[in-house]
Length: 94
Image 1 (tube, one colour):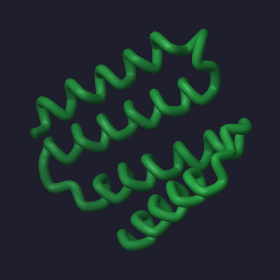
Image 2 (cartoon, one colour; image 1 turned 60 degrees about the vertical axis):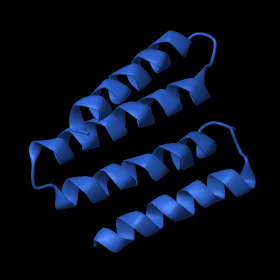
Image 3 (cartoon, rainbow, N blue to C red; image 1 turned 135 degrees about the vertical axis):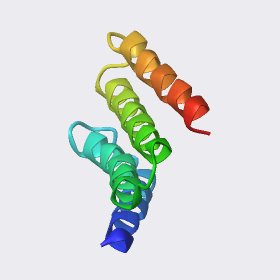
Image 4 (cartoon, rainbow, N blue to C red; image 1 turned 90 degrees about the horizontal axis):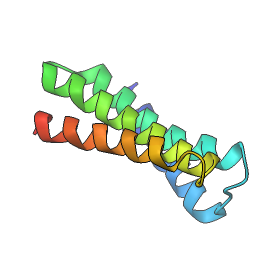
């Protein structure tokens, strides 16, 4: 099952990169799926609180990516806030 999450992440990231379709909702779904499947991979193997924080950080970055793709001008500050929370969680985790 864990290899499935990695394959989904890699294939959706590759499809997003190859197709370059920022058209809603397909491009947003591919971008979201690439990161969320990595978070699911880490969640499945978590053994400490650091892995739980890593999952939350990945989810924050996924939210930031989706917000930027959805509407860059209106949702810029919430996206930056999501990225900031994710980076703070990375600092605490590592």
